[in-house]
Amino acid sequence: MSTRDPVSPPTVKPVLPVHDMGDGAAFYTRLGFDVERFDSNYSIVSHSGHELFHLQVSDDLDRHSNPTSMYLHVSDADRWHTNWQDAEISVGKIADREWGMREFSMTDPSGNTLRVGNNL
Image (cartoon, rainbow, N blue to C red):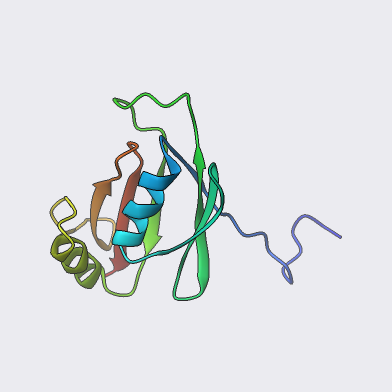
């Protein structure tokens, strides 16, 4: 099998470091994700039946750094922005960007940045 096999492309699931799995799982549940906890150190985060990313407890996190970031491509960034504001999550301003995306960002309690956007 070639590494360029078009039939079965690889998928990528980022692993976001968190300080505490209970707090991390609760935060992402509040955002509207489904969180399946495997143990006190590892969880899988899904939305609408699709696995998106993982959470793993890390003792090496510096609360003042940005350990990880990821981009969520969605069909309606305005809806996600409104839903998270309604859940009293601090989110950045949503705006149309010169690179053809309507997007916003937020930072979770462990310092991970999530950018959320849709194509214009």
